[in-house]
Structures are given as structure tokens and as C-alpha cells.
Image (cartoon, rainbow, N blue to C red; front, side, top):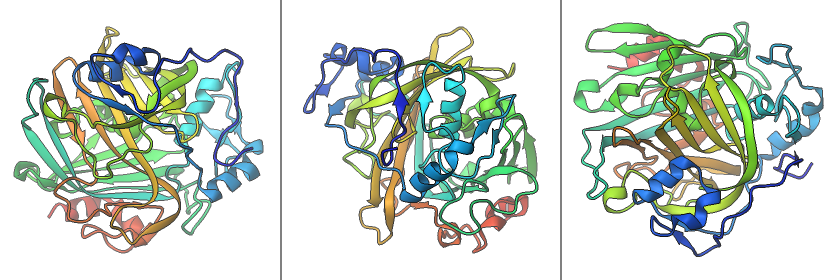
Length: 419
């Protein structure tokens, strides 16, 4: 297996390439040139002012330890009969050789995505800004809310490769990961609000989720269906983070095809640069041709807000480049776009990784309500460019967290950090 690339067995022809090449700038005037290379959501954004600066594609290398774990363990991995668990999984990519004619191709791709190389042990994002507001498409967004988030942390319990204990933490409860989004630092009326989430290895098991609201001094238990609700009055929902953060068992998955599409994996501007004027709901940056799995997920949850998602998963980096989200009538509702910057070091930071890490920012556009939420990491007001910590364990410090990383993911910490 070549380093950093899952072997893809293609039994059908790739979709014909659109006529774009490095140096092109795709705008609403010439968007037809990229018609075969973008989904309906990205096209909608271009038609409303986003520009795609076309550059030559560059490789995304897997972390060395992830590649070695894939080579060592992948041959023994099997799907459980109900497809909701992996049997004999240790670390690395479960299914590096995807045959598109395999009836289980879609579910295997989704399991690969769940255990992608981007983050294997833990991640911390600090002090990022999230403006949200209505769109006129003629003038810059005037935010009706502008959030500043103190910490967003995730700690993985299995498939670990960098920080002891590995490959799995003591795990009697079958935890896949724990996640904390807290505290909200601004605006004032939301100050201290935060959420805590436990995801389980078995996809048929529902998440445990809690929301703390200091104004009422109450921790509220949340259901899985609420993960599709807009979070804190923004356009983004928990299941849309990273492109898709729901579990596999919550949808029926179908592989729609394998094709070349455009995506952002090596953006020019590390501090994300929003488009000018009325297109500032998005980032205008470098887009490159990528080999992509197009995956459709139709929800099984009757109370879920969305009817389906279409995910565009990069076949080399195994990240979601973009997602088109549809309502129950089958009409495009929201568009999520990730803008990655794969690199070993954040500019201005003294933290250098042995492998390229996927620093990212994102945007969620509600095409029906003409409203958008822009996630900027690092934000323009952040004094420190090093707001990301990948696979650093207790060394990923912040003013909101104790030294013991496991203590962060508790209800008591969720309450304490609010104050």
C-alpha cells in the first residue's frame, strides 16, 4: 500500500472532468466550467459570490504511525453482522482497500471516515470566533450573534497512536470519544454555556449529551435527535461539525459514486480570509482537484431535522470537503464547507508536528433562510495563532482546563468552567 493513500478499486469510469486548470478563478460568471467538479451546495455559494482559486493538487500524507497501524492491523478487521461495530479493530484505517462494487462499500467508507487519520488521540481548539447573521449578497454580513468559544476538546479512547495509554485507554463503558464545547465566552447573555458529549464505539448505542445553562443553573440532558438542531441559535448543528459528526447507525448510507471534485486542503491563508462584500459568508481561497467518494445518508431518526446529507469525502485525506444538507422535502437547505490547511506547523507557533495536521475552518450557509455561520480558527481577534493542539494529551493546555485531560470531560468541569 502506498504511503498515505488507500488503494481504490474502481470498477466504473470516473465522471468526466470539467475544464478547469491551475490559475483559473471560478466565479458566478463562469461557474459552468466547474459544473462536473462541484456539488449543488458549492455551486450555490459560487452563484452567490464565492470564488474558487484553482491550484494544482498536492498530496496529503498520512501520519507515519497511522500508516504503520493500517498495514499491521487492517487485514483482521471485519464488520459485525449488524454493521454497527468493527470486530478485531486496533488502530489505523479499518478498510484501506475499497471496492465500489462491494455491497458494503458505503458503510466501510463511513467507518474509515470515523477512524480517519486526521485525529487519533485528542484535539483542542481554543478561542475561536463564530459570527452569524443574515445575508443580502450585496453587502457584508452584519452579525446578529458573534460567539467566542473558549475550548472545543475531543478525547478518543480507542485507536490511539501517540499518547499513552495506547492503543486504548481503560474503557469498561465502550467509549469512542468524549467531547467538550465550553465555555462560551461571548456574547454576554450566553457566557458560560457549554455542552458535554459521550460517543460510544457501538454505533447502535445512543450518545450521552448534556447542556449547561448558567442562567438557570441547570444541566439539561439532550437526545440524539437534538444534535441536528441549530446550536446556540446559529446555523450549525453538532452533527455537521467536521462535515459529519453523527454516528453511522443513524442513517442509511449509499455510495453515489467516485469522481474528481474540487476541495480546499491547502488554503493559502492560515488565518482564514473571508470573501469580499456580500460573499463574506464563505472563504475565498485555493481549491484543487481531488478524488472523492460521494456518499448519501438518509436519516433513520423520525425527529431528526434533516431528510438527508450528501457527503463529499476526500479519498486520500478522508475528510469531508463539503456536505449538502436537504430538508424532508428533498430540497437543498444547508451547505457545510471545510477549508483545510494541511501543514506541520501553525505560522508563528513553536509547536512542530512530525506529520501534517489538518488545521481547518468552516462555514454553514442556510440557503432557505439566507443566513450563515462562519467558523474562524484562529479568529482575527485571537492574539495567538497556535489555537490548535493535535494529539497532545495533557500538554494541550488552556486556561479553562486542568492538567488531567480526563477531568475535563465531566459534568462538574462543565459547571465549574462556566464560572
